[in-house]
Image 1 (spheres, one colour):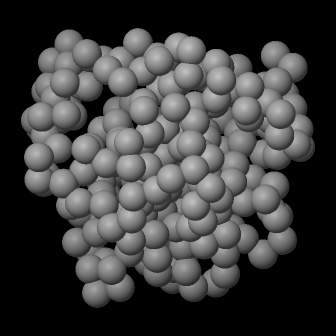
Image 2: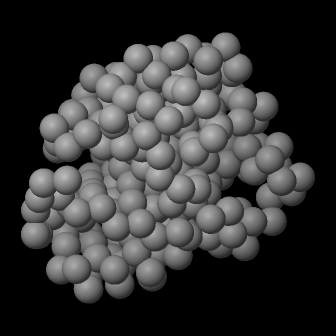
Length: 215
């Protein structure tokens, strides 16, 4: 790394990695604020960081549950909420129904959503493949969800992979919107990239493109 900081917060019952990525000493992107908004907010404040962006790798509830409180806390600086257009339905006032279907398929009931549900704000920016969010380039990698994306900082050699690629594995494809064929194509795309790229996944430990390509 050169001058960028990466902070990991493991949040919520599914132990989601929320990443705070700061290009300088003032501004930050919060990637996948999946729960525990108070922890994320206090960490930003302790680091004296202002969130410019709330970046969502995909729409599953365990990656976005803290968005309402986080956006409300920093409304004076108006962080831009970003998600790929194909997962845009997971945000906004009508999103509860979408989350209910997804959570019920994954966990058998909607209890985890119902216990902490707060109305989701809409996206400020709907992303497409190749878009830029600050220093990060959007890589659309469907398979886990239709809009699953990774965020790549080419200069720094880091990639935030969401639930597409993990250490020793990849995201499940059996939930609504998942597609095994698309996941295989997305992994092929990643494995063609520089093997030294460090991967910061949505769950679990850090890895590299090379390590996963060879496993």
